Every structure is written in C-alpha cells, then in structure tokens.
Length: 220
Image 1 (cartoon, rainbow, N blue to C red):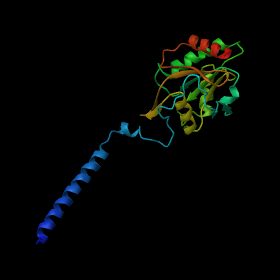
Image 2 (image 1 turned 120 degrees about the vertical axis):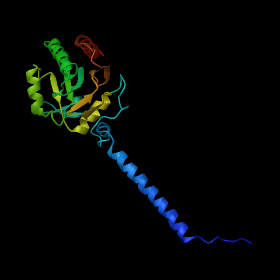
Image 3 (image 1 turned 180 degrees about the vertical axis):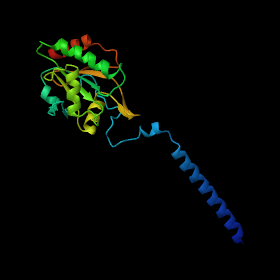
Image 4 (image 1 turned 90 degrees about the vertical axis):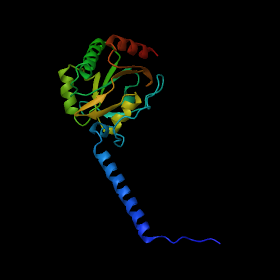
C-alpha cells in the first residue's frame, strides 16, 4: 500500500515565493549586464550585409566576380568593362586621418599613375570604405586635388552592400568606430582576363612592385 503525502499550502506558497525572488534577481542581473556592455562591442554587431564578411576572399588565379559601382563623375563602372587591361585595386576613404594609411596609399597610387603616363596599359581603382561620406562629388574633389587622371584612375563608391561584397572578395574588412573607419590595407592586381593576379596586404608595398605586377598581368 502506498500513501500520497498531501501538500502543505503554506510550504508550497513559501517555495513559490523563493523561486519568484530568484527569477527576479536573475533578470535584474541580466538587464544590468546588457546595459553595461561596452559601446565598442556594439559596433561589431551584424548590420545586414553592409560590412564585409571574413573568409570570403578569392585566391590568386580565381576570376574576380563582376561588380558595378559609381565613379567620381557619377558614371557607372563595371569591372568587366575593363577586360583586356590589367587593373590595380585598393581601398581607402577621403576622411582618413592616419597619414600612414589612406593618404600614403593614395600617394603611392599617384606615383603609379605617373609611371603609367604614356603607357598603353593599366587602370587604377580606388574603392571607398566610407560610402556615407564619399559621394561622387567628394571623390571628384579629392581626385582633382591629388592630380588623378580620370581616364585611368577611378574613385568608386556605391551601395554599402555592393561595396562590402567587393571588399570581402579581396579579403578586406572594415567597420566604423568613433567617427572613423577601421579597415585593412591592400592592393590587388587583376589580369586582362579578370583573374586575380596578385595581392599585397598592409602598407609595405611599393608602386614599382605593383607596376611590375601590372606588366606581368598584361602579358598573361
């Protein structure tokens, strides 16, 4: 024979009260933890595809996916339109305050632009990582100030998602932080068939080396 013990109403009420207090304390601690998260962490949250994703880069020898962006004159530029010529691609933005980053990259591209003067090959593309501020008009003014040849050297902007896809193709990541754009530095060379011929990451590349890569890419 078995017996079922009758529950004590007062004891049951006491246990429920303890559980409720513990749950209330847990949710209070959770709310405090979320409220105290650093702002820097929030900038790394997903943004619906407007930032490049890691591990999306193509390999040397792969065909670069076609893309469509807008140049400093407000004209549409498709990568596939440049087939038949080697192309050097880099990433920057006009507000960059770090002299060793974007300004240095643009100075090197200016040397490359000068070296290509009089030659019958070579195109240069500077893709912005700051489409919110780098409008065609802003890019046109910047290009004029550094003496960029508009026939050879295009500064490109466009839809943030389209720019993010282009950047991640080359393994370049970027995100906004404290009013600036944190981004990787890189320069890539695309051959006449639209394949990735070479890519250098960081700030140590030299215009002469990229010129050599353009010449080799032209002869493939």
